[in-house]
Image (cartoon, rainbow, N blue to C red; front, side, top):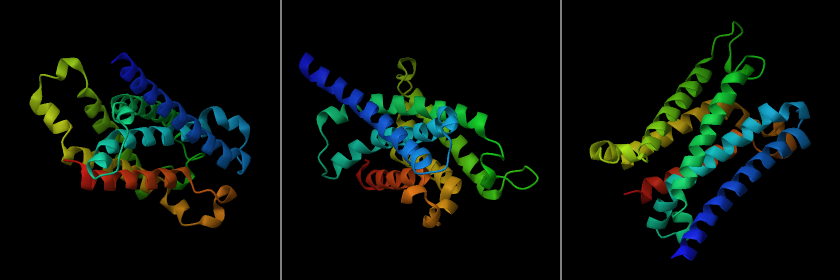
Length: 217
């Protein structure tokens, strides 16, 4: 039993570590090595991009491994047992991303989301609304794991229901789509031919969403 538990724990650690390293590595490759962004911007701007991608990947894995297994795509027990840790780590990374983005959110950096007078564009407002609602929903979902709430059966059933989780995922999709879809349509401007992080995240998200649509009970 101890050996099995150790393997499960190690699986979660490996998944989290590799996901974070790969996502930050992609951000560095796209924006610094192949792109024009100076290295002085890595500790905050580019690191934030990598963290946001890692957060989404971990959350999608948390929501989608079970449904994938339900529709006949074999998922190792060590990965299934890692879902809670993946979800909690993903939520913590979302929190870090939200705080960093709050500090960075200004017209000089996110010019495409602002009008000339400094107000948000329609798409900028929709993206921010989706992001905020998604964060609140994820926070509520994370509460369902708290010991003192486990006796609140009605709340737990609602917060972990298929409809609620599908709605939560859609809110994340709204944030991603309106944040970056204009850049998706201009491949000639992709640094080194690599797609924007928002597009990579959206494709990964949609894969997980389809899995949940058909495999979540």
